[in-house]
Image (cartoon, rainbow, N blue to C red):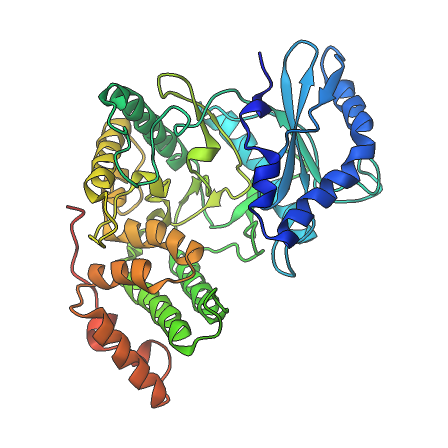
Length: 445
């Protein structure tokens, strides 16, 4: 069997696509590891049940925001994956403390999933969450996780697009059964994770006794929370702070005001949609980064591996509602094209969810299909993703929020907001009563 890293993106092309400081973060890590590749191979061999020798594939590696990733291939063809924590991107992201939380969270999450579901996930062989004298690879080595590799291809590599841009089948109707199988399997994963619940919201902590509990969020160390409302209040605060940060257009005051306006819209939209019956939990487990690049399928579309659980945790049911933005259609027509295709995928997933779910349901009695198809789920999960990844953008997220809230003229509402700010009014008080009242439902259709 060829190495799984053969399917990874081209290293040189991927590095060239990055800003120099980000590319250096990766190449400097590889340069540090290079003299120690033999030691890494020996360490992996010592953990192999048959002590088989292995080789690390040095010329075809990959990376994410937190880890540099290498494949180890044993003489019997079996592969393991080793991921090394990279240096911080800035004073806030990928710090040593955050990296430790992410590694411990992923190890605990994988234990939960392996013990309590049939979801196919890697097996953790060894890990060390910090640089320390006790690191088995050496006191100067970065944090690492060593786990089994999983074979398969992404749904995109099977010729099906889940990005929402154009026909997902790309004109080939013979691929429809593959897409439907993929959606059924995501629905099954969603239902299985809904059965893993805890009394608080946060990330996973693995105790010395092997028990898994809930601790602070792996990303920024906030929480844990005992209330959904408290969680969403903090999320809204975070978006307002994000809106203050300089965007690519620089410090243009109008652009900044637009971002701040959208952050306020999100807070005003989500709060009336929360169901008090679910406010105190129990809260379900979410993967946290479930997109096509972290899902492996076989030729039929059946999911054979789900990767990268370092963002996993428990969340409110509204945030749980959409497992991945790729299976949720835009609730409103924003003129981005492919609306019919997105809704077709949305509806197919929703049908699969209705078929897959038997129990449990949250205290409010809402089914997972109803949550996926709701304004609450759309704002709390789908639009929350875009709020962060697109930095509170006005034309996509803002207009979606504006329409969901049943408002007539977003640009006029924004101008009223600007005028109120000019008069010294701040926060939600600058919004009209229509913006702060409970919004009418907007059908997905």
